[in-house]
Length: 342
Image (cartoon, rainbow, N blue to C red; front, side, top):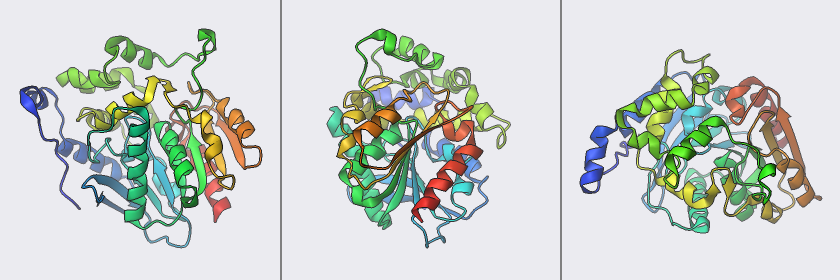
């Protein structure tokens, strides 16, 4: 396993802030290790080095399952590999599963991204393709949640020959922002609270500015995460993980800010480009029935791709984090899709 990627302070303010923020890459590594020890299947966790010196933190489950197309899962904004813990064993029962921290998030490298939306998006997509090449994965079933769904779609536009099936889970950034405010679905309370505090700052800057109170803010704004993972953790392990993922240098977060018009909307909406994916790439869109994401997007994608396979479905009792709200149903749905491939 490669060395930890500790962030190097730059300037007097940056060198002072780590003492103010109770976080480090080592602490993130430790809390993630507590999560991954819940895995029953064999797994391999390591850094994958890219030619440009960036490193992608990768967890591969059931690496011995070589007969079927692997499933690759891409997390959403502010997430990391640890949030798939309710899904990893089930989804790797009959095939290899790869998860990784997106460039700029979790334990992966946190470089400076281009400041324009297209450049930031391309940087993410290029890093995914370079990671795939380095891993030696010829084709894959590609699943993305939220921001990960947006990036998985962008990847599929550029590299359709690598994708056997595209699974989009409550994908962010698809619809155009309505001109009529009454048509905008209200975001959850925690999103509005953070937006009112931060104004034009990075989306999760409050966690870093809050210093020693940052971990408590995660628990206050997102107490639901503790409930979602209660079968595995009775303590604050998941809240700690989310805090340490997002209290580091906000590299990917800054890129996300460049790509968004406001928290719920993309500057380059994917619905305007979904038709560019090759016709023979099947797409399944999975939504939580109670999500704040616009679920009508699935039907609009069907209209944009009349000659292609597009299926959309909603999982009852689930909100935006479908995979954690109803993990057993989610896993069964994804397994069915994977089995349809091979």
